[in-house]
Image (tube, rainbow, N blue to C red; front, side, top):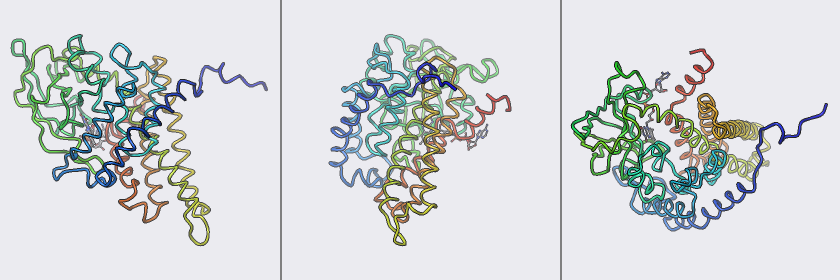
Length: 407
Ligand SMILES: Cc1cc2nc3c(=O)[nH]c(=O)nc-3n(C[C@H](O)[C@H](O)[C@H](O)COP(=O)(O)OP(=O)(O)OC[C@H]3O[C@@H](n4cnc5c(N)ncnc54)[C@H](O)[C@@H]3O)c2cc1C
């Protein structure tokens, strides 16, 4: 039977010349700008337990190194290259952004994590900014001169975020915001936060309506205790908003519309996080395979034992499947298709894959897998975090079940 030529099927996994150049430049950047900083920091960086002060805050020299990387990456055109050119990005496709995120993560859990914009960087919600807000908030963040954060979660509302207790009330041409947020990434170091508050009661506006996003500057909110997670210390904190007054021009997007605006970008967040999971898993599989070839027990390389080789092979298969799902998600986003189910499937698959691969990598390395001198337990902890943020495992499965018409 005649087979169709791959390019005429409309689906392509082709590695373009443009991508090859980006990949090479990213590798050069990490080698030139990131690796020397890690070396210079020495033990302060290589031992995660030395990166923090007593309360969890990241030590100044590490924060400085992160800032240097962000700024140099922005200058080189990498940092926010997925954003449109008119706001300082490079306008690359979602497929390219997916590959770039994954590729940088495949360098391992180092400072390279800060080369491409993460939660502290310009998120598409900021693209809804008006002209003055663009100048004041979006553009400096694209240039990595400032950083931000996304303040939604509260003590009483995480997965059920529309049920938030934070309120904003209009008072003349100002808004008065009251509430407490927690687990807000970059809150201790951000120049401004994007704060979600209820502005119209649920009974009137419906579950997803009635929520507005405000730009709140660093000197207007109070940072409470750090919310240190095993695997992510010194980055998340409580945010207290006590009668915070902001002018009307701090509303980002439409009044009462923020939840719908944020939902439109849900797939991107899940794609970025999943790309990081796939890249980290590829890094671990390479280390595991290398060790399985070299380490000997009972007179044989341990890779010759099926218990070891199958762990690695099963991990490879899971990461392969997750990567294919990531490519498909990015491609559908570029094609303008609806990706609610795809992004949940990818987020669930990729974070499960990283969790299982990280556990297998620790096991394959025996006692040295548990050692503080190796990064494997740190990735395992980070993998656990990825199964909770940007929608927990259960929330992803709920979304998939809803799309199937089951739930
Ligand atoms: C490292 C880290 C960084 C974070 N950064 C940010 C940030 O920058 N900004 C921000 O706003 N938030 C942030 N968060 C918070 C994160 O988004 C929430 O933790 C997450 O949404 C889950 O909410 P929760 O912790 O309140 O758990 P809950 O929502 O209370 O869930 C508890 C458990 O119940 C399950 N559950 C809840 N509802 C359902 C349901 N309907 N069906 C089935 N199971 C359900 C959950 O899956 C989970 O297993 C961060 C969290 C961490 C750990």
